[in-house]
Image (cartoon, rainbow over all chains, first blue to last red; front, side, top):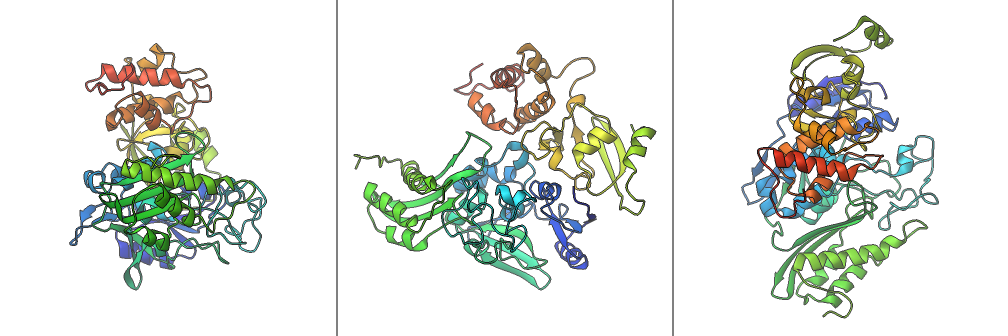
Length: 334
Length: 182
């Protein structure tokens, strides 16, 4: 394991000050990803700032009917929270589809947003990787890329964001609250994570010394019509090949609104607001749903190991609509 | 709990290395340590406390052999820095029995022959004890899903699920929901 010094903060401002006072500092919360990255010689912080004593473990209602979840609330605590289960079951289902009970008991909301890709080459310090060491190349392009991106990738990096929770947060239009030396700010969820472009080593738009302090859910929770469908290589405790977080509002058989985020296919949870806009006012039927899925995947690019994901994602989107709306869009069904 | 030999072996690091004072309640007894910041809870328990029941399997949080119950929750101790967990109450496989009376889950694993090589068993049992306390498992399918963080390379899963179901049926809150297959 890489060596580092350790310091402990008890307030948000103190944590940010400690981070600024130490060169190459990193915050540690649950550590379920960071400790592994330290052990695998991928992360090299000189100092860890322990934020586990910060008062960020509350789940509380917001003034406008939403819900604010502190950055240190564990996956388990979110997934089994009564309000989350009742009003945002999509989020609870996505969390419980990810990791193991042991990991969920420790992993936090803030850490979930900031976890790194599980690309094999990112973890293998003996191979080139533009995300781990910018400019060295991408081993996944022509390598083992079954788990890799089909949307939004660049010629620098085809890694995917591994989270399930974040796919639901994207579909729910969450907001990420940040604190830094110059105060607090909020980012729409879609603006938190980045596509790889020319800078695949930068996963998010978090600034230096900034800390995720909370995730806020808006009032709309899609409790009535929602689905989280995850396809993976084994029945449990595996990262997604493709996952779909879907929330739908219906007026009879007319789609009033649909939010659809894909996981396992891109460097960030993937949404297409233009494709969703086309759904508004459309009848809920097989043609509508398949057309939507096709439009969402229209720019997908497969590689040797992952081209199957394009058809798979199309089918998983259709399946998510079936589960969310209790209808059948099988071939031959109307 | 510390022997001079073990302490000497671990003191190879330069003297200017930061030491973090930590206190844990381990299987009911309070212990204090001065540790390097990168010490994991797993290494502390095995190398400093000589609790060799808890196992290092993958050392990546993938296999669950290192599962212990920390502040009432099962966790992968290989992914937990001891400094971060300062003050915690920890139960390992060594702390489950009541004197010579095995914990009901331990006894059920024996009754159902729920292991072959036994390497994963301490983690399986700690995980199962905590899972039953969580109260979310209602049937065998739930057990399989909620125990998925514990791998068994011998493939004793069928008997592991049977043992956990049996232990649950004998407890104060048996799994009576539809789908239970004792």
